[in-house]
Image 1 (tube, rainbow, N blue to C red):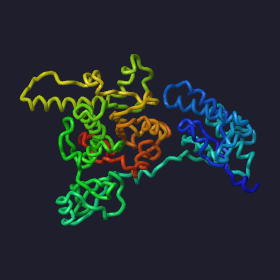
Image 2 (cartoon, helix red, strand yellow; image 1 turned 180 degrees about the horizontal axis):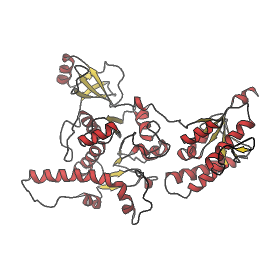
Image 3 (cartoon, one colour; image 1 turned 180 degrees about the vertical axis):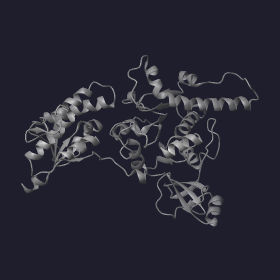
Image 4 (cartoon, one colour; image 1 turned 90 degrees about the horizontal axis):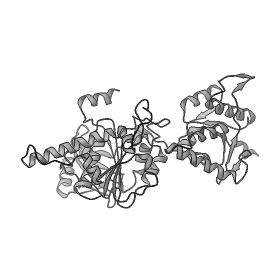
Length: 453
């Protein structure tokens, strides 16, 4: 009995289950309570074709499977020794006087937690919600509240993908002459870049890359300053990014950076180079979450392509920059001012070199020999990120780009989004590479905006 008293009770908000349907199974030997209001809210989402709708249907399947094992009202035991219950929702009351409005679902969920807290005073009752306002209101009525953070990293210490090493002239000359250096500097992650510098203020050191297979550091092999589909790297961070993007052995590349650092542009340039010029992959697939900035403009008429075009416009803009830059250079190299018609974006789309695909439709697909770019990946939950990466077939390379400070998805932040978590979790893997870009290259004005706002 004494051991039972130590067990805790967790009351789950709807957003926790929609964020991750498996959340109900992550509280080990404790009791998980799901108010009936949560089931009603989940029911409203189940007809959707997006990730929210799929998660809502999965929640129903999980609970129905538990129902077959016993009564959800009394509680069904889980494999980890915990209990999952579905209970009637309760109003928030205090000496028969309502503290909060009782006609809102959030307050009914809070009221349920408060009722259980009063009914079981010897147990610790916690309301788990990803909504900050719900947690604040719960605290105001005397209920312990917490965020659901099984996956969370310290963003201020996010892996950069490169490190600066202060060495003497002799070491740099030895490296440049022998083109390798044994790692005697301590722990370096697979595919991490090293900048050999003479002092802390040196910003133009010798850039190299670590090979974990033989614990040695080598010069860059795949990008040495050449033009990639009409553009060149403008700084060391972009140089390192290109080296990862062009390396066929690195199957997952993540590029994190503020607006204007060039992460999307160089990812597209490398993808077009590998698909159109080198034929190393069958197709370049570009996708992004459908998350509008500001208020949604509602339903859009037309085909899937027509509906998706407003969200893909940033991709179109970058593609046009690359294609116009490359075509202009080819005309100049051939000595022509008006040469034959150069292929445009629509030509590449029609021939199947490029495919623009909403993430909504990517689930269930198998993608072998593709170069897949996922832009604005910071708007993905860890569960959605898993869904996308598991689409990769043999020979496929996935590139994730995004800015964790610009998140448009509710209940995600810079430390709990799928992009930040994938950077930290995959940094030990030999087929994964990452670069955090900090230098703005779009324009002086864009760099100021990204710096001060």
